Length: 223
Image (cartoon, rainbow, N blue to C red; front, top):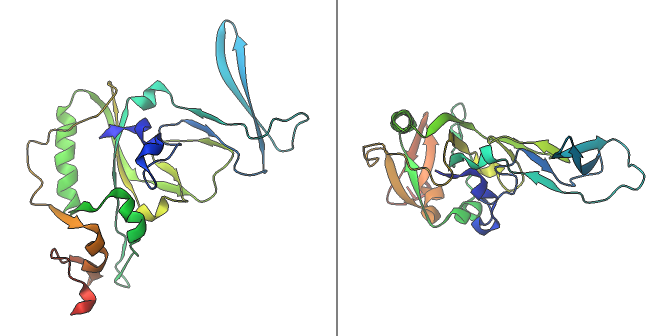
């Protein structure tokens, strides 16, 4: 599990890099609905940031004010992100797969066939790791319209450029900074299948309440 603030790096590329990752306060000029004003204030020997948001443009307002806060607590957080597939059991429709976007993650991936076993094994490893103070997991919520001032958390992301991932995320608060490795003391071969992304979209389908996958990469429409 990588350090949360690492995902703010542009070096990770499209689909992975997001400058709001690891931030708790994110101030960027998104629109003219409000006018955020950022000031550095000193009081009683301490310095802090003061953010005020106005509904009308103040006199002498400085345009394009930016401020992103990455607190130390967030630097001690590690996350693991998974791309998920949505299935409509009533219509037997599988969510559309955007191969072009998926290719941002590389040429290969791993398909998890039993998520309950995956979570059970991860939970056992978390319980055994004393460096983990808290673990949380859930789907990410995507925001269609980002505000000029956003108060972020690990399960909130902008929709543009990311919502196609339907991301499910594991988030661990720890007492260390850096990579977090979990020792499950077991293999994942029984619940994980390596895939080649260029073949995956055609080789997976949803029918009669079941997700079906052809490991050889052949398409379902070539029957």
